[in-house]
Image (cartoon, rainbow, N blue to C red; front, side, top):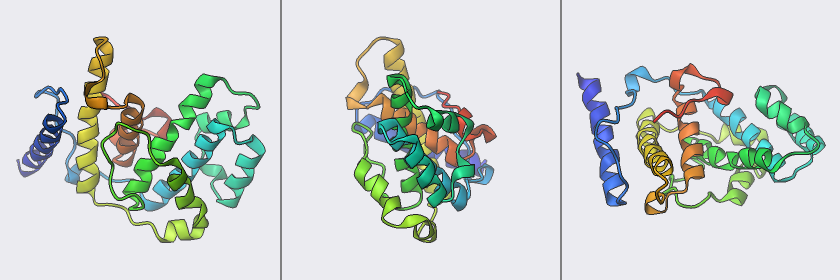
Length: 216
């Protein structure tokens, strides 16, 4: 009962934020997991994933495959790319759709940097993240310092954002399904990537990175 109340309070807090921004919501959208029932990804998992995301996003922007491989070796993440990422990195020519998919991963990276306390807060998702800052957060430190200076936020903080982005995502999807304007300037791509990363952080459905669900 205590844990159910905890989740209900989290949902209520999210709805207060949605109201503040005049974003539609439905009261019967369910609560999410509680702290007791969630196991966060480990700090090593998050750091390795962040580096991989930075590299595949850079590849999406046009970084050559051999440089991606060189940097992956330098940062010791060759074994941490997913199957989809490995396939993309090997491509010598990419379609615009392929490039776009992986360039959007900067937004996923932003969430992981927030979870590691390198980013102070997840601002309202109406604009893309500060890509140069995201990249420099890793590049300026190198692997050793990036890992050693990282601290994972509390379950409570991460679940607060997971619940909120669950509801942001419902609002953007509902607008798209009804061919209506996206409410309050929300950027659907930003919302999706952040929801995706947050669900990965909380081990939603125990899914690996390539198969994270973002049900709404």
